[in-house]
Image: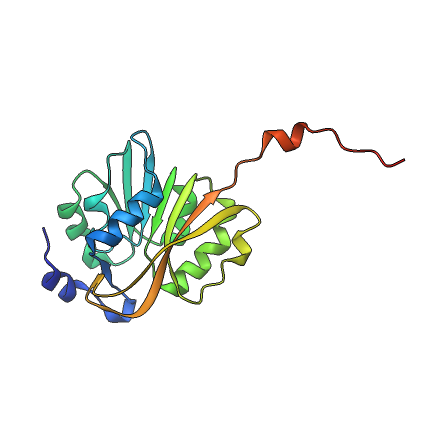
Length: 185
């Protein structure tokens, strides 16, 4: 298992890479994700595998990472996962998933939020910037903040504060659709 010092040397600051390592924050992330044993889980921005190697049991786990340097580390750290190298914004549209987990640079997450309504998933748990505008998601999803993450929650320490949010597809209320409409008369 890669230790925090090794993670710090793997991280590329030009790519805004910080790997979530806090056991407490990982536990909150997984609790929010509500991963079931029969779920297909997709993690985008998998980095060095610090989230994926702690993933609860699931039917399948696919991890996506853009940085080619980290692919072999991912294969070693998370041997049960299918490791895919490529653009997360493209692959998230192609790879099936019930649960989506993402720890991408904030600018990429902003673009991801634009495509979320097009995707088929039950729950997404995403790291977003402190100032990320989540209002556009409220029409289709229930959105809830899980926790703030910063500094020593990461290796290397992240200089800014981010937050983990849960985005769950809103289920239509069958009671509302069955109620007769009142007539004005």
